[in-house]
Image 1 (cartoon, helix red, strand yellow):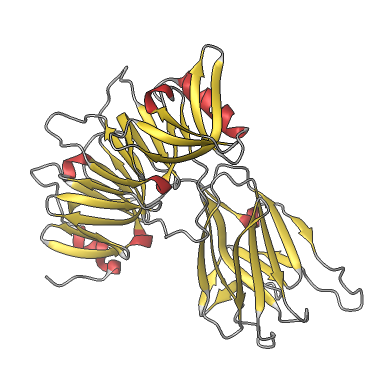
Image 2 (cartoon, one colour; image 1 turned 45 degrees about the horizontal axis):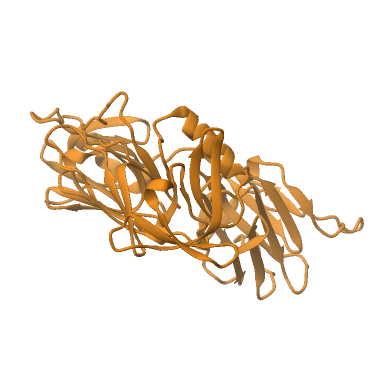
Length: 406
């Protein structure tokens, strides 16, 4: 069937009515809600059917797809929680570690709904919190994480709180109920998972460049997944998370919602950075950086596109932003503002997260803009440095839509 243009969405769906079975509901920009059926999902958007008409809606125009399935509520249920490095959270009845693979058993959902299967590499896991259903456990866990070092932690819950053994978790045994743990002095031990009554924390090396987040998947089992891809597979759905885990739902009854409005975003141009830059010549004053505008006080423009938010940064300028530690990703589209015609051959951008370089690249005036998506989970300070061999007018970069996202 011929697909209509997104601009015709409202007109095409105006006569659509709720189907006899629980209808999916598409919410688009302007909070317009349309009942119908989810047909397909890909990196570019969703295909949705209503009243006999299929429409391909770009991801940027989608706020949510509600599949009409409710998250199960089980007051008093006990569970542990696995958090992935991308912020995904999985509630578990049990967890095994087999070799380099994490094997969570999810909580049961509504009657008749089959639980999903998980493929989770150990490198995708940030932590396992025991007793995550208890507020006290979560509070103690958060305080412990705030003061942790740079090693893996084997955490034991004691009467006076949490105690932990720092070291390196190498792998699990064949049965999955014990791990090889190397202490800071190099001694290795086989430790039972059951004795980690507080949980486990993994000091995973961050990925410099993350796959883009497509949407947040909420399922009926109480899990939330930050997805880099979503695929309708037979009667179900396959989700690949940003961290690299794969979750397969045998039936769409196991999925509650695809959330494309993924939570809290903070634009760097709304923050107050510490600025390090050469003193401006009084005879030839210049800007070192600007918020949401270029040096001509015009909107930021890259490759024919105009951006309402972003940073314009002159060469030999460093901006250090305090971002707290609640964000997962730093995103920006980087290039030379198209109003510049006299820049040098290349300008360098370095991005540091708490003093660690997570990106370093060069940009020529003739280059196409480049999208950055960097891992800043747990980072408190983000530093951006723009440099050029010869700092004269024209050597600058635009970081359009520069933002951190939870």
